[in-house]
View 1 (spheres, each protein chain N blue to C red):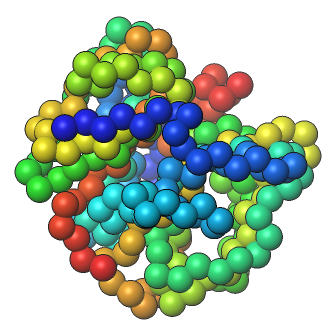
View 2: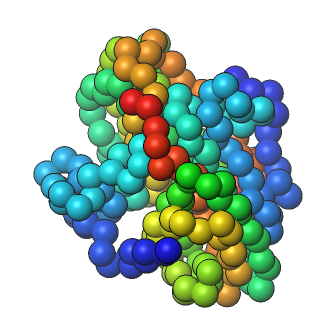
Length: 146
Length: 109
């Protein structure tokens, strides 16, 4: 069985610095039919303007995957991490007992498109951690992501 | 951090696993749940398949491009929930970038 969800069906929220598509309930968007799919809880497709982003906020007991499609994201958290996730890179963050982080477009000129995907962890109270990986080498990024 | 870097060839016209469950993962990223993430970069007319084991389902998203998935056309930002299916067959109609999340029907929380 396949259920197709057209692009226009995702909940779209556009404010001055962010255009975001929520596939599942998130923030002010609540849809009782779209609370989760198995352990997949959130799927957001975000377009963030240059020089802007999400200020520090907290997560708990959630596995948060960030995949940068275009541009670069500066990620800072209270674990002491301060780094960039570039196009073609993926990060997994375990919020566990709690993490506070901020996510900003690292560029002053270019927009940033990323996917943020939340998955329920298989147990609560995990120690916070993260892992990051380049999916493409630098020359391939130039080819793929302009 | 994992030392291995993927190259273009690793996911070109293939399905590349990029995240796996923490007790099962190899060089890809790990996650504390029984899920796997895959990326694929398909040239026009190229085909790939992903097998779903019994008791599993998938969520697929077209980052960009156009594909046919089990006979259904999907375009940029379209998504699909796939269940009770053994094989997901994908053919690119235009250059396409895809992400696929392989999920369990039953899971711990």
